[in-house]
Image 1 (cartoon, rainbow, N blue to C red):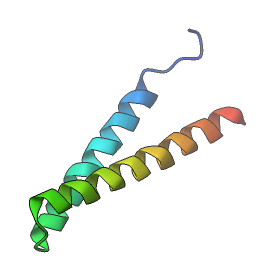
Image 2 (tube, rainbow, N blue to C red):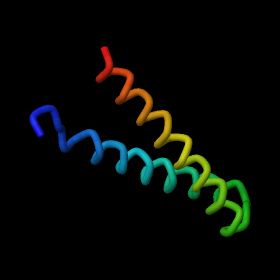
Image 3 (cartoon, one colour):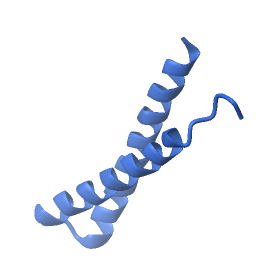
Image 4 (tube, rainbow, N blue to C red):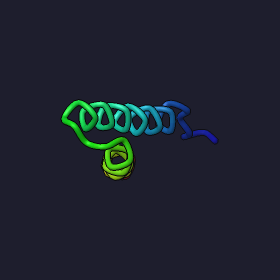
Length: 62
């Protein structure tokens, strides 16, 4: 476990959860129903986590 960093997975989780809460609150502010805003937030969370993961792995390959 020499090259393992505990901060990478923690940052990935934090970015995903913060994105989800931000998108949920924005959707609710603009008048979406709670169920629809939760679905949109889940998609945004997955996209943010995927982008962050790709950026992390791209830096490690170099």
